[in-house]
Amino acid sequence: MWGFESSPGNSVSADTPVKIFAGSSSRAFAEKVAQFYGQPLGALTLNRFSDGEMQPKYEESIRGAHVCLIQSTNAPADNLLELLLLIDAAKRASAETITAVIPYFGYARQDRKEEGRVSIGAKLIANLLQAAGASRIVTMDLHAGQIQGFFDIPLDNLEASAVHIPYVQSLNLQPLVIVSPDAGGTARARKYTRHLHAELALVDKYRAQANRVHSMRLIGDVRDKHALIVDDLVDTAGTLVHAAELLLQEGALSVRACVTHPVLSGAAYERIAHSPLSELIVADTLPLRKELDKITVLSVAPIFAQALRNIHQHESVSALFYS
Image (cartoon, rainbow, N blue to C red; front, side, top):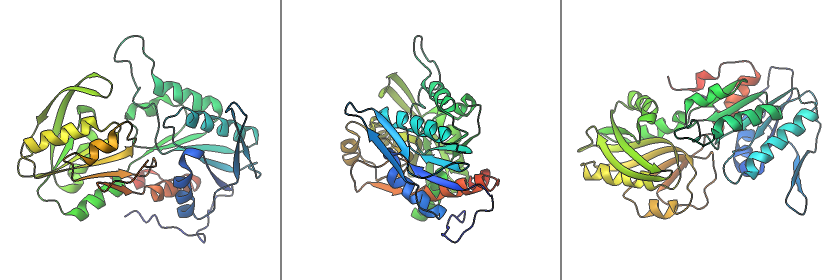
């Protein structure tokens, strides 16, 4: 849709060389980004002391280069620490600019204080990335848009809808209703309704504690319609499965889910396998622990590659978004 295709012959107009490196948690994804960008990944080693302490080292000169570091900050915390060390090493090696490409921005669910004596983890991570020396952040479908305000450096929040919407259109699900799993995701769901010419419904849920839903009810009409749940991430899949069951009880013809980040922890795979979901559509911002017939993975590597190209050539990144 956006003309993501690129080849090694595509030249970059800016004088500053671009060098793309992969962290250990996103190696496969980074290889795809580099392929679409049109150049190989840079040489990098991650040494470890006997106690597990990490020491990254660039095996080529990055002096004066625009360094792009690709690493999701999902658990364990080593992934975040590795990214911080890579940023610090690049800064000390005289990179001109350092772009932290974080396909999945971990700790984004901790974006505010809903109760006393808790941290705002997303703000802490923003401070750490800036203190380490990042010049820019490129990520996708932040859990909460206000996290962009935690940074004093440019942040580009890309959207997986650029690949999700065309795929859903190809399924030709009519009539279709888009379902937001909570009030906070309504804006994201409305974008899907506009482009898929669908109606909107909302699942109102109350959480007694993290990863546990106490109650759930449907606002809207899904009877005799194909339902598509739209969300930014799926973790334990408990809420997603309960929502699918509720939608079918309310008369939906089928239920699919379109989610960007497949965190899929705990018993998530087993829940999905035995759920009434017809399909779970995800992006490849995180690697799957195992394959499942119900899970369809769409690559967003071309979007990241084009975003990096546009940034380097001082062109608009918003052109990659659905309006």
